[in-house]
Amino acid sequence: MKLLVATAMLLTLASGAARADNENCRKSREYLLGTPGGDLSLTPQAYNDLFKICVAASAMPNVKDAYILRDGGIAVVPKQDSVSATAATLAQFCDAYPRGVLRFITRKEKLSIHSVTDVARMSSTSSTPCKKIKGLS
Image 1 (tube, rainbow, N blue to C red):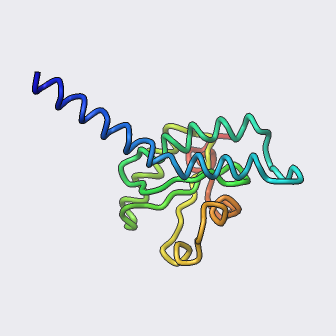
Image 2 (cartoon, rainbow, N blue to C red):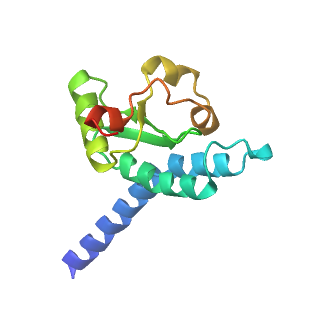
């Protein structure tokens, strides 16, 4: 009986953590889909597809927060900002999403971010797309 209660508590805590992890994914998607004037780079369905990628990215070991960008990229705040940790995260992301774009938010950029909308408006054009990294055409 104690094992059953302990398992239930762990599942509840894990699902709560997962909801917190993808909160920024949800908020950035809502912002992008609710942008007045139709200033979207992609279709609404594409942003819904990016939401799934964002949630998966937020669950990666070195990702603290993940967001959907207006131009279709995924922005992440890394837990560890080292070359090896960044390379491992990028490799994991590109293996899972070979047509995706992952943008790392720097420490300096984090200082100027005040809301999810600040991130969602960022561009991923300075990031190398996974297609190029993996040599796909």
